[in-house]
Length: 383
Image: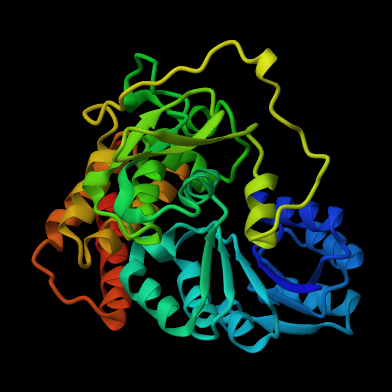
């Protein structure tokens, strides 16, 4: 039985991971979970899965849960995630937290040679070169939970990367790709309505700007050791083909399925095995159409900025990610307009374009400086 640690168990990936484990209780044991503010759901998860360890970032929530579950071993505070990844005994860690907070626990898990089932894009965006080198050194596995990267991983299986022509990374396009709409008028409420997937606020806004796909391009570069020039983004509104790989002989291998995260999560947990399940399956006779479009990078400038940052490399993807996080939360709090998200990111990339140090200390330092610069931009921008 494999021991699983889930960071971010109350989010969409975390709850879906627990749903998978619920189906395979004889194969997986939940040894630890972590949460932030949804303590009601966290309490339900503790009662059902009976983990030994609990991580909680908010002090007041720790006090409430401690009264209810006094027998648990607790990790608290700002370093609780990295401490859990470093100190708990587990076989697989599922990293499903949002943003740069996932970087340090990923590093700790990779140092220990663990299997990292990663839904959190930001660690590989911020420090992909460092993480992949460390993973190779320590025989750690980094397996993607994102449906797109899982599709690529499955399509590449048993093939040599020298035969690869290009990766075709699919995107739903979000709520605005086919709409004539003034980006200055878009509200958070409208931008959060994703047409296919139920996701958290930050990733939903990233999907609406296509930054999410830009981050996935950078993630794919490191996961599959390819140059950005070999990655193409394809808008596929139905989200049935999760991604494709084209080989040099012209063959294209695709992975298809319903818009459900449980299958890629299950595969990351069970790899290299596949387990029978009763999840919804794709019915081809109910499909009306599969359509594909080229992304409009003039309309969705964030995607263009992501490609530019990874082509330059070094510290630029770190700047991209940090400025985008601050800008997205600024938009959600209605401090800036939807169109100003890209403006904040572009200004940040220009500001730090002369930075050329790339090591782990530089990554953390530039992340902090970028966030401060982006916050100051938001103060000076007018709605």
